[in-house]
Image 1 (cartoon, rainbow, N blue to C red):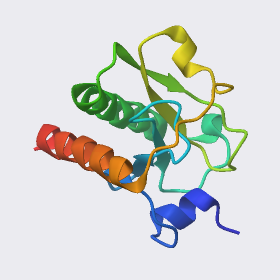
Image 2: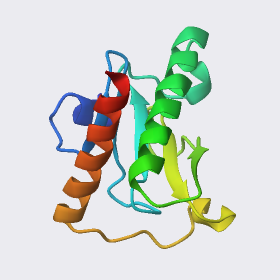
Image 3: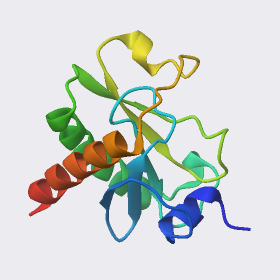
Image 4: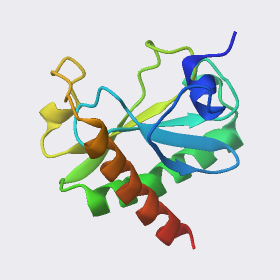
Length: 135
């Protein structure tokens, strides 16, 4: 059975896409810790992050790095943190979270409640930065 992330990648479930490549898909977390909180997932359905092959993992980190630079360009923050949890969805992924303090990466914190217009605006801003950077 396909994971929720596979359904998002396949367009069966809508998402706020911020970047895509042949191997990876990135979209805004719908229950973000901060504006711009993004999930990066491999298009190939792999349950556990550390089961990703070495070459694909290297490419995922490079893709995430490029995306983090774009997030920081459009979202006011000191840094973009990266977290690998892997317990909530059986599909490997990383969280890219804009940070102003170490406490911003605490997944016990209350999640933001952003309206659809805010999510669209954030996603479009990051997407435009990503496209500009990769061309």
